[in-house]
Length: 246
View 1: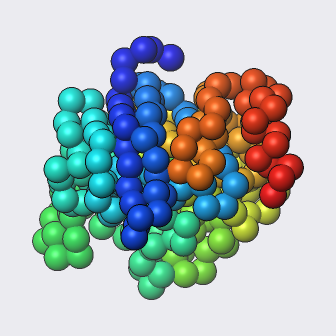
View 2: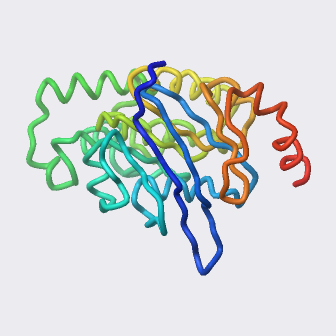
View 3: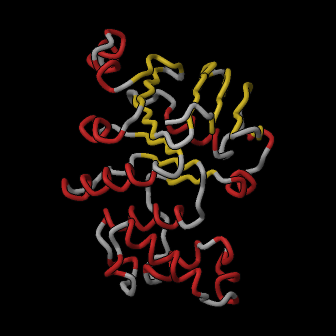
């Protein structure tokens, strides 16, 4: 891992009617790092992703992606500079094939209209094949997306983000509802993805976290409670107290 920062969140605060959902948070993510954010319900985990991707506006503080201050940017612009975000429920085009879903997501074909008018050139096909292979869907390209298993839909959505080649990819509980074998493949997928970009994952499944995290950040009541590798975090008395007290 290099020490080049991709994301620097400083003193980030967001208040909803006086309630601080995120409270003076500092978070630094390096290039090609796979960071997992854990914490009990209501810790502010999803809100942090909402703030980074521009879905929620910060009350105060700074979010720098490389050297760009994201708090000033609208959501679509944050996507354009290279930040991809996957929500808990997969948003795929159920009635289109896997191939078409990936094709629509290709940067040149932004939006349905764009994809109708741009030709399926060799570079697009090559990229689709490469991503399909990565997300374990090579042999499902012609299958209608709505017919995929829950896990495969999650992979397809990750593929739809990957094809845009973001430098920072954020995933909210990617293995929720997956079978054991799908979880294993997802761990493999995320380890592979982080070789060329930074990834932030919110996750509850501790076994899964152990398999993927380079570094773990623990949030509690909107504040940073602990940070470090999984072993250090798991043996941290403050962390144990928060988890056992819930």
